[in-house]
Image 1 (cartoon, rainbow, N blue to C red):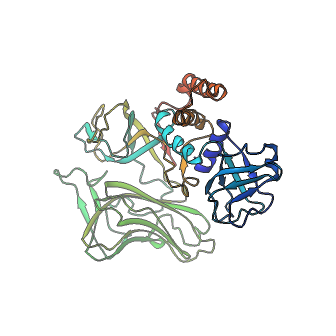
Image 2 (cartoon, rainbow, N blue to C red):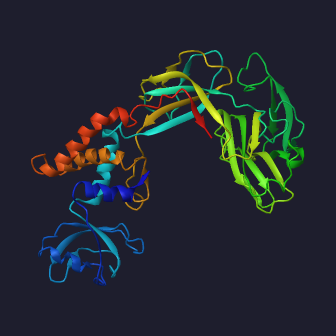
Image 3 (cartoon, helix red, strand yellow):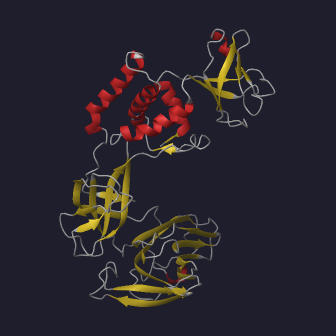
Length: 437
């Protein structure tokens, strides 16, 4: 991951247009000059039409760009009209560009498309649950481009020795306390295969309209005779499979003497394994609990729970050992895309789709572009820069004969990437065993 500011400077260096300097004397009070004695290496008027960009976070004019209208060699003074909003004081850092930084940012954004798929980000989606009947499934909108691999989970053992939860399969109500929620046990029916997820029973929690609720297991009801003081200082993770069709109303919490840590909210897309981690207070002595939290809403809410884990681990293990589809190409032209799996997935088993997409745009806001980021590394950014340089030079009307040195570098990068593409992660990972901790 590289910030826009890092990419701008490295791209400028790539095309031989990189200069960072520091003002050595206060400029005019009107903000119309920068004075840097190091610029005296340039002759009179040679810096006219160069772009000067304030890059110092201590300046009120940070990221503002002005174009030089005059340059005096003897003093190292650059003049601007209309000038910056404030005096450019001694010690303020600036950048000097032959090409407008706005055009450079635009070229970097455009190069995201030209450098795909060699420069791309991996997209994972785990919102689809197998129904035990169909091989065809709709591709989630987040997976907008192929190729796509599809993996089927291997359910995590709900009864390992490290799991402190009692009644952790949520097939009975004992050891849990409902407040606000109405709790009951839901048994599988033939007409609705999606609930429970794995077992024949699941916990059903109903929340009335305009009511909040919690479903909690306290340390007194946990396994292994654990106490609140024993867990002090340790990192614990609570993971819970939750079925919900309303977004942003359900989350998990771990609570101790000092407070609580909250998970991200449920997406409302069916079965989702929520997860939250917390470092337990070093002085913990009385309170340690895991709970499901439901927020108040205008309408009533029904959710289902089927299997949870609370453990002294940074992540609860989750494995995806079975590949159901490899490198599938599909159309993503605005209509719902559909995939056909190699076999029917197990009912209740979660599917992970792995695809690729363009890296993120740096945007168009000059104040936000430096802090926005792209999913590139020091290696992959070279190809991004080669494509961005072609866009930039084409926009200003340059051809290869005008800047043989720069275009030679572009060709070298593109040729090298063409040769190394199979070894550079262009292909989607095809491991039959993908594991998360």
